[in-house]
Amino acid sequence: MGMILGLILAFTIPFIFLAIIYKLDFYQTGQFRIVLISLGWGVIAYMMAVYANNFLVDNGITDWDTIIRFGAPVLEEVFKGLLLVYLITRPQFTYSVDGAVYGFSVGIGFAIIENYEYVISDPSIAMAVAFQRVFSTNLIHASSSAIIGIALGVFRVETSFSRWTFLVSGIVLAIGQHMLFNNVVTSGTFLIVVIGAGFLGAGFIYFAMKRGRKQAQSWIKEKLGMDDRVTKGEKRIVNRLEDLDEILLPVVERFGDEKASQVEKLLFIQARLGIKRKTLDSFKDNEKMHNAIETEMKEMRAAMDTIRRSIGTYAMLFVRGTFTEEMLSVWDQMQTKIQEKSAETGGQKGGGLWSSLENRVEQSPTPKGIE
Image: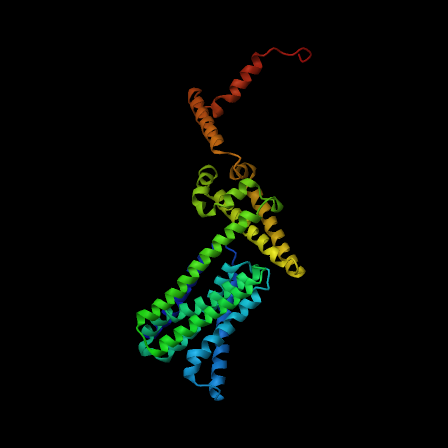
């Protein structure tokens, strides 16, 4: 029973951590399909690392203590990072936050399969092993590969020489963190220390993603506009997505939840379009990648047009800010007057507007030549 609970714990807690990180992708640039691929790659990376480590020890190249302290952190981060290196060459990869999400996913995939090996190896302490690992080793695996993903994401977008400095620094930091953790654990230390190290690594990823979100916001302000058929009113709202609930409340009140959901979807597509346009600048000399990103942007604009039609002209005018606060006040006053007039005229729709119009037509003189 203890081993079964241990296996459940070793599986569910890492996925909860991944769900939290995935939720931090505010502009939703990361693709769920690639997250699943990254998880799978983590399992493959684990198998590659096991083979490499065994090969080095079995052939007398080194011993297990050296592998654990120094060799494993290097080999494991290299193997985990191979998929991330490939992903930055694909148009679907956008910026550093994608790197954090995909890197964290690779690390979680690696950690879960490693958890199972440790838990199954000693059923008598399965729960204790699972608990210790999910809150320490798992977070180190995930945050280390996420750091490499972030570094690769910055490297992909930046065009100056400093991108190489950032890339090397990220790789050194990821491997160094992993190596330090392994040495601390191997030397023997309190459980609270290793758990603290795990949460420290995860905390670093949290703040790095927050910084990436802020940078993306500046890109949207800079790049999103009429080139992508986004009006000034729409852009003004996209730049305030952190207040989305407040923005959508008037839409919900006037048009309902379904329209508000469509508006939300439209705004986030526009935000991603602004970020994509920024990344396009990084591939001016890479025709293949430039064209691939352009194709993605074309598809996003087509999706925007479809959603706009579904929302409707009146609601879109409202969203774009045609109805300013002053105009909304007038509109509300008009509705109030109509309701008051309706009460006076016995509840006729429009306050008896059509009846009044008919009476005036009947009372007006008939133009000559129409009789």
